Each structure stands twice: as C-alpha cells, then as structure tokens.
Image 1 (cartoon, rainbow, N blue to C red):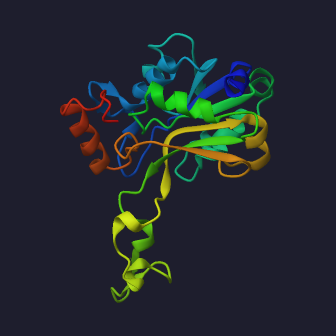
Image 2 (image 1 turned 180 degrees about the vertical axis):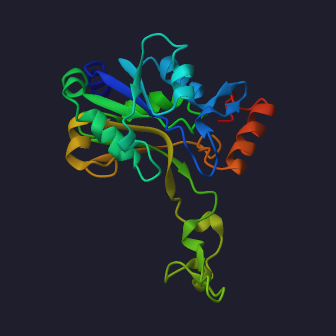
Length: 246
C-alpha cells in the first residue's frame, strides 16, 4: 500500500529517445516488426501502461517525427544537433531534458524507454512501479545472461590466445555446471525509472538506491543487430509475443 501511495502522488514522464541514425542496424527505430515500427511499439506500450502523466519522444529524425504525429497528446522533442551524433550518450540526452526548468517543475520522476525493446508489457510496468518507492532512486529492468558470464574468455587479437576473463573462473576450478553458477543480469533497455532529483545528482541510473526487476530472456530482447531482429520476428511469427511466454 505504501508503494502505491508513493506512486499515486507521482507525476511521471515517459521519455523515449529515438535517434535517426544507427550503424549496426540502419534506421533501426523505424524498422517494422509485426506490422508496426519499433518506435510505435514503445509509444503504444507507454500509453497502455496507464502510469505516465505525459509521454515524450526525443528525436532528430523527420521520419520518426512523422510517425509520432499520428498520436495525440504526445510530446515531440526536436533534439538539438549537438545531442544527435554518434558520440552522444543517451544519459546526456536525458540529463538535458530533466534539467529543463519546466520539466523539473511539472514532473517528480521519469522513465526512459528504449525503442529497441519491443516486448515490454503491462505486467512489466506493474512490477517496476511496485518496486519504485520513496526509498529508491532508480528501478532498472534486467534480463538474464543466456550463458554464465563468469565462464567468459577473452581472445588476444595478436595471437588468438584465449584466456579466462576472471582469475577464479569455473573453467579453471572445474565447477562448470551452469546450474551451480550464480545468476547475473544485464540492463535490457526496457525501462529505467528514476526520480528526477536523483538523476540530476548522479547523472546515472546505476548510482544511489537502485532496484532491479528481472524479465525473461525473450521479453528482454533488445534489437541492436540483425540477429536480434530475426529472433524478435520469430517470436511474432510463432504467436508467442503476446502470450505468457514473455
């Protein structure tokens, strides 16, 4: 009850950062998936969640702006050129938005939703909000590594010598049963909730009192490569994208 009381007193802004360019997967934010562009998957998910006071798309792309104009009550933020090149970090974009006087005055918290995460659902938003209370600075959605990272190796590009990445690797001790390994998670890009004051102080989602909520491997698909896109398309073709499978 205390968590929901905290949430009910919040004005939360959803921020969807969608730059036009992409090197690994060209124009990825407007790629069609299941008859809908990736950016529209994120906008629709934010609307259906019913937890945001307003939704903003920040972009430098005319094609993305045109797609956004199909929606009513959507803030379209025309990103300045200085925050739209290949070297721009998304945290810099979010920091600039959160540091605006009108944003700080109007909203107490925000959520960053990456458009490359098309399988976030209402149940995921609900779980995130349940964790986002007065004692937490941020809540970050996480997906499991599909292979224990403690068994990672590195390869020297000069001689192809392979070396366990960590000194006490299970590969050295012989404890290689995957079910015996501690589970580690990665940020999956689906949702990053933060109090605006905390983010302006830390300029990071990973400092302060951070909570994580885990999503399944498939619901954590983050489309940055052609292989990611192929996997997402396969889930939709198998009619698994809107089932309990995620």
